[in-house]
Image (tube, rainbow, N blue to C red):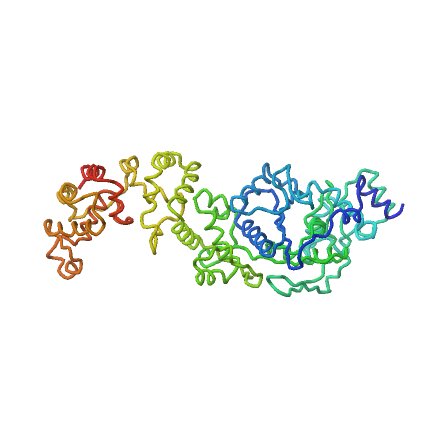
Length: 547
């Protein structure tokens, strides 16, 4: 039996050769400076912030170089694949404006000339490349059982040896064709292992786009390349797909750094140009005096669905990611406050190599800043979408009072320093609920009743002072004029000098009115609130105000 026949025997029914596939996947016609990146998630659960970060960075580098960013679904680990996992990935990223030039657009559809982009549909391709290795004595069938593998692992742990199949542990590395055929004919199960040409005593150097020059021991592990179900491992699929799809830059989490010697050895074995690797540090969190990686189990904020449910704007999350992605982004933003963040050019040398501390307070601050700058109408529309999904009662009020709500949201918005009290669409209700009688009448907000609160003052104000036609200056002048009638001074400085002579100052009079009509001590501009409420509603609230 020749090597080719042996390869056909081990991996039968493969329709094309490696060389034929290389002809099918032509080299991309792009400028030399164009970057081709890929985001290659596994459909094994929810999309987390780390995935969003990686896909966002990959998308940006491709876009700013007129390159290509593709979505490849790595679903060869069938035991971990979840139902609707592909749709979840696509929709979650699309919500953040991350749309790919090529790749899967659903579980059954894709776009692009370098597919299939779902790995489970590329089984024949991987087999063709594995057959090439077998024909060249660079791969072999391995018949070790799970119990044998576990026994080897335990022995290695006991003697503190490196874990894996290499050297004396690779018992089927030099098996003859005749013995392999005999075992297979008897029905023994097998996988295909790569016959590593490496020597662990040698060193290999790789230039990482983010971390610079890195040195590793050469790989000598005989890794699995084709599993018993005929599907490839991540290591082997990564080589085949990145080569055929013309990926120039592999941007991924630093958890794959230890696998780098394996990956570059595979590229070198096939004689392919290595892609440029860029390993991103993990997102971390401070917990007491220690810093740890964000955890799916411990940290709800790791899931991107958390921000959707909390009503944090997608744009705010993306701006926050920019602060993580490049250390000089915030400096650029301060220097160019009117520039769109999309105008910023990412660079690999400004990506942190030590991990980025996730700061929810900072994200909240960015969100407040973002929401303060959009128009009242835009905020209304976005809040409407949010409440339609998460708060139907408030959604009904917003729908019923559209024009009124936009006016409420516009208070202290179109000014040089707009208000920044709203950090999310969810928070809109918290901040403006008192402007709706339906919510105000049910309000259980507790506020401190103070000695200078006066129902007599409030009645006098609405019956004799308040005029809906007054401009702001006139309105405030009238409030100051009524101060002395009730023992207050219109001069705040005078009150601070001689507090024993007065019940309070004009500021305290405004506080009485504010607490009465809003049940809050702190609100946006009182004049604007009163103007929108109108005299009849103010009077009604004064009548209900309990002192």
